Each structure stands twice: as structure tokens, then as C-alpha cells.
Image (cartoon, rainbow, N blue to C red):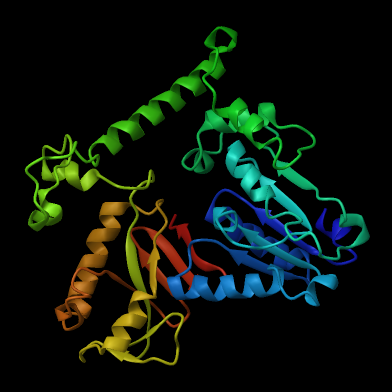
Length: 360
């Protein structure tokens, strides 16, 4: 499809629902389309690494200048995840996306022909979005961890062949999220719907822990934030469960590359050399904080946390004396960017980000 549609140039955006799939697809396309520019863009880069990729993506597929918008872009493919749909001002001549809940799908489509004054290849003058739907109808567990099976099912059911934006947005979103009539449902549909309702109820129960109580008349300004009561927060454990994001917990750590004994470099700043037997300067701490990354949730949380805590404590005791670094975890990669952690092989590159494979 890409060879046919982008034969005369243009830029395609491909959005899939998991980082692992984006990485695998980018690897495949680089081999299948030699000479093309394939850019992976997802959340599994360090903060500094992601900023660099985002800058490149915006320079190639962003709004650009009035002059640049009159030129047809060469064969460019950006393969990414939800980060593309979230406030990134990019413009695609062609879009290919995996199925996602209707509101998010429409948000993705908002990156298709976003800038109206752009000159496009003749065969891409009309905005077309190809939505990928599993042919075998099997549930992808990795996607189910991100999006409800029920919302996916409803979106596929109500997805039309053509959409007028923004006119159709309220109608399509309402069709997916409205309360279902269970009398018309098959058993499989009922199971998906009940699972969805249970998931939503679980989110509500979790959110209640962090709801502020009604105004307290005796609260004075000098009480500060400690004077506010947290509803239903009976224990410190319950307080700890309060979170603003409905995702599984993941481990955040600083990525370093090991050099000589006791010498390390930040993965995205090879000009800086750090030594574990020397205190960190303020600038070095600031750099390290930009090298933080979230590990894949597929890696066992407790095993990985225990291993990282032990290695960080043993290898960087002097660094941990710094109050900003005190509770940080550090993952050290070898010079090739590889490491083993909790039964997984990890590899980090500035092009593909952090990749993981389970050790068999």
C-alpha cells in the first residue's frame, strides 16, 4: 500500500496501539522499503531522546513555512503510537491506523490533511485513512490492556466508510459510548459490555480515594495542603493507590551506558562522562533527569524494582547522597546499549528507543 500510494512522494502516518508493535513495524519497513525515511515515534524514549525525535518529526511533517507547504514531501513514513494523536501538530498525506476507541480514532484522523494549503501528490489529494482491523477477530491482549474490548467492538460496528469532520464527531462518539441495550446483545457482546462496565466501576472506586472532601469551615490558610481531607483514604496504602492515570504501574529509571570501570555516559548525551566515585554537579543531575525512561509493563515490577534498587545502591552510593537523586533507580547498559533485567533482554538506541525481549 505504501509503495503504491507514496510512489510519487508524500508522507504517511502509521499509528498502532502498542510501542512494541510500532518498533517491530519500523524495523520491518526499513528493510522492506530501502531508500525511504522511516521514523519510529513513541513513548519509550528518554525525555531527551523523545524531544529530539519530536523535533525531527515536526521539521519533516509539521506545519513548516508557507514555501515548504508548496513542495511535495519525499517518501516519509512516521510509525508511532498514541503520542502522535496527542497535541502534536503534524500533517499526513496518508494515514494508516489500528482500530482504537472512536474518540481517539477521530483525533488521529485530525492529523490527516491537517494543513489545508499544502500541495500533495495527485493520488493523495483526497484524505484517506485506512483502519486496520484484525481479520481473525481474536482479542489482542496487548491492545486489551490499553483499550476496552467493548469500545473497540462498538467503534468497528459504528465506523462508517466516510466521515465529515467536525460534523460527525458528536454522533459517532455518542454511538460508541452510550448505554447499550442488552436485550439485543448476543452473549459475546454482553460479556464485553459487562467487562467494560466493571472496568469503569473499578476506575470510579479508585478515583474516590483521591476526591477532596466538602469544604471544611475550620480550615485556615496557614493549615496548608495538610489541612485538606482526602475522602475515604483510611490508610496510607489507600493513599498510595491514588493516581491520575488508569494504567498499570511501571518503573521509571535513569539510563546510562557503562564505559571503563566506574565511568558512565548518559545514553543521549555522549559528551558527558560521569564517574561513580565523584559527586554530581548540578548540571550533571539536570542531565540525568532528562535520561529517565519508563520500563515496559511486561517486565515483572517487583523483580525489576528489587534488582535495580540493589544495583543502584551498590554502584552509585555517592550519587544517592544527592537529595534529588536519593530515590532514583539507575539501569546501566553496556557500550552496545544492551542489558538484562528481571528475565528480559533490553536494548536502547536513539533511533528505536528501548526495546525488550523475554529471555527464553
